[in-house]
Amino acid sequence: MKSEGHLKKTIQQAIYAIDNELRSKKLPVSGAMSTEQLEQFRFALTKMLHSLDSDSTTEPVLSNGGLGRVIIDSWPLNSSLGEIILEAEQLYLEFSSSLRRRK
Image 1 (tube, rainbow, N blue to C red):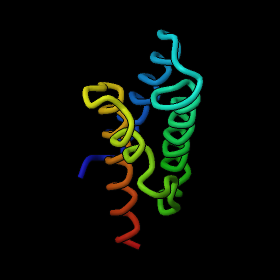
Image 2: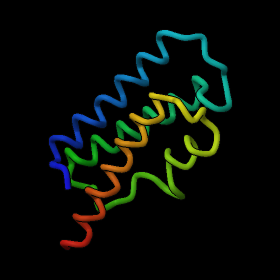
Image 3: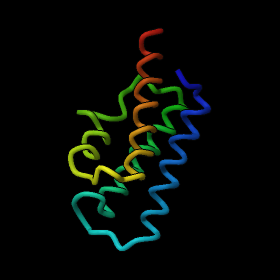
């Protein structure tokens, strides 16, 4: 398992990548890879990051498969932004799962 520091860095990179995407392109208002969806993803990632700082990773931040399910179902397969977000979410879920098992 990766360290908490690596996890935080990965989540921060995903947030940064979303911010760049929001600034650099004309995005649709709603739907896949829209401004609205990216802002929701950014919010979820920020919540993950805060849960690490407040030691509340045992409380689920995501539900029903979270960001990954949306990305897999509706984003282009070759989306580098999708890959970054998926990695951050997966690492978070693995980390929080390992903490719950310890308690």
